[in-house]
Length: 299
Image (cartoon, rainbow, N blue to C red):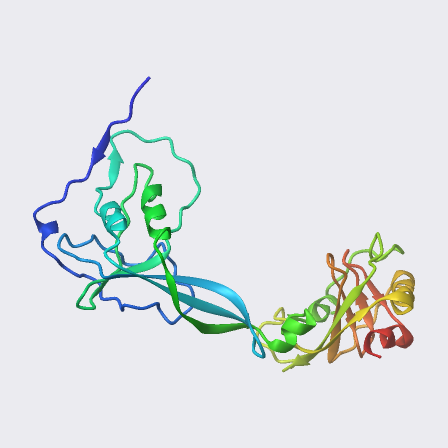
């Protein structure tokens, strides 16, 4: 049995000279969540004294009247953070022999140390022989007595209309591709669209934007913007399911300007709301609905 020889990195005399190689602000970046693995962290200057620790977290949150946004939550912990500073000054470990390591990634929260003069450091976190931060360092960081300083909206993820509708703001018009003469759908056969049939069905209607025949790439699909939504239940749903399950095969390829996504909570179906009234089932078969059946989706 071989024992791995663990080497401890020692601070050199150069490390004792305080140098801030990367300028950071004593606040959270006002942008989308950064790639935490690629952040330019640095060794902690030996004479650095901590007056504050600022931690940043990026989350998805609902803002009343504005929909769902990515927000950066800025937290502050005042004081010297002695335990954290001790952990950050530990030397990293390495091994002369390939260590036995697990493959999971360990993320370190974005945090900066702020000195009494206001200068900020984005510190490097010491690692064990597998290149992962010491758990004790992560515990020291997370156990600080943080107070929330602010919650800053960064970018919109979902509009208020989309949030309340339960539909996407935009959706690709996949019917445009399947309905082309040169694209053959799967062999049609009569079967239930969903088995078991859903007890409720969300209908998201979209109007196609900038649908032109001269797109540079013929495989590019137009995009539909959310127009309306509704939930079908009871007799209306039963009538629609019967129409979906009995719709005959379609060889119609006319243009359409509106379509609906039928979402039972699992496999979605797509319907043209004008044009040929084609139905694309979850299995990929293409059928054609009657005007009365399409009317159940829009009335």
